[in-house]
Length: 329
Picture 1 (cartoon, one colour):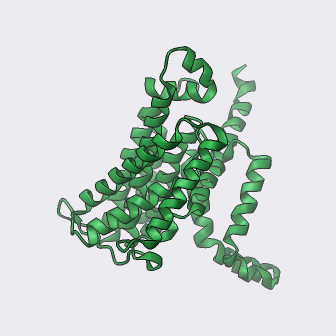
Picture 2 (cartoon, rainbow, N blue to C red; picture 1 turned 30 degrees about the horizontal axis):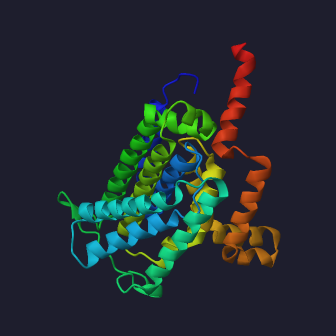
């Protein structure tokens, strides 16, 4: 960012998000976007700043979703403890995955994380506490410091506070000496090794931190929606977070948030868009567009790979730099 302080811009963004429910935007939708945005930011910490591509990050989202849901519904824990317990269990699962996979590189690392994630998925499918194919339903929201979280608006500001705290942690991590070492590992791992850094340990810490934050997203999502299902842990959710990160802009702070907004908005609004296109063009096929979310997201992925390799935010920033260049000179 050429030495400029981005924090005022981030503050303005969060103030704008905080005002959305007051402008009539449905709070549940915004909270769902925030949960997936946190999931994407956690994944981006791993791939965008460390250079590790995990195909199994849904395992951490699902672990925390189920643990938090069970803690809140069955054990009756307060909402903060349930969410923190879910995130902690996801971090522990991340440590286990990392110890098994971190010494591998490239596609081997990715495939090991995918295999481990699918093994955990089948555990969730068979386990009694998850509800199997029916999922864990009717998870209570409870309260926080006397605040009634059953009120959507109250919960919205709690979720926004969780997201801001996690975003700040990611920002501080990326801009710390630890984050600079992660970037050097991404750019030139042999050089980092030659400088004396224990590369495997740095990658393991980054993996566990990413898993914990992904778990925080999953636990918060269960609190918001009131249920946890196998969809949270299936491999397609791992693919979804990769898509969010690539569409928004890998290696940027805001990119995963933009990507999450685009993908979640498509999933929720594509049916309305299809009906509008059908009415406008008279082509009845558009009425079934709501059932073709995977087709549309696949097309978006292809377009991003071919034309927007730096993602929406990355390309927008590159364009801004090109426009500024003549004036700066």
